[in-house]
Image (cartoon, rainbow, N blue to C red):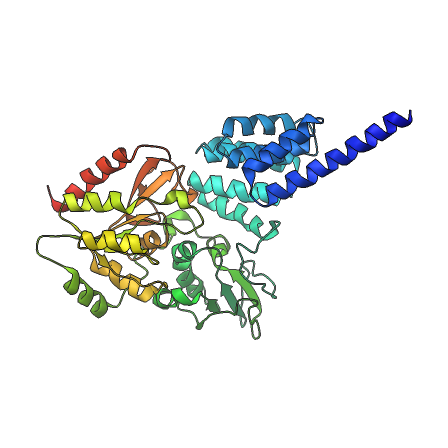
Length: 426
């Protein structure tokens, strides 16, 4: 009897240690190691809640079929079922099956109506399907996500504006998320002024030159890193909530160009860079650290441009020494410095004939300026680009060049060659 009790206690401690280790690896995004740890844990006995975490580790480790099997097994546990449903939705979204993902997210919400993650992920897949109005409504659940620091960079100690009249009151509109998201949504600031609402826009410093083009705000300001100064304001609202709270419908979404460059500056750059018989193509080949899989090799692009006698203008910040050598060998222009200066970047975009970019802020800037823009997308692409489209309703001058994430580079090169030949008129 005593022996059995000791064995049970020892096994209990072992399971607790395995749980602690597996969860720590999961939280540290060490997914391959976490898979092994969760599998050792599950070998001690079935734990359906651990299967959800194992499913996510497998999903992040590019093993979607095994991930789905884990999520489906975890549906048997009522406590785990909502998370398992979201996992199935995330697995479907990861392969671009957003219609399937939507159904899983709705099932999760039916099981747990206040499940913020399910609502937020539903908003993403609805966006991919072009169902923008419901997507923006569901996206309001992002306020309730477990960790909002990645979305909202600083606390806002004000009541949140819910779209009600603000007669005699002042509104603080503050930025959120990435530079590309901000540029995409700057278009919604003028409609706020058209409602007679007085507001101040809190803007990241690098984007101030762009915000000055569009805001019609009483004032532009930049916040300290830790907290917004809210003195003198009655309400606050994040930028990406404006289309929902203003009740904007898709046919009335403001269209580009709504951002512009200094024409004198852009003309001077174009004159300095242009050579007879060569189109200028502004290129951004690396995304941010958010998703390095969006990147494309600079050598691939330079080879295509050289074959068509086009001159490359590098619109990339933090160009490496190796990249500089490659650009120099192809008589390319390194247009930007190490720090983003979007006043200069906008002038560069205005000076070139075409912008060719991976999914990064340069693509949004060129689209917002109404410039010819081609965006190279890995599939499945970010949901803002929707499913299967070669155009973007956000940016009418944009063409989307989609490629399979594991597809051969030759397919993309052939597509670029064919499209760039049309620019030259071949």
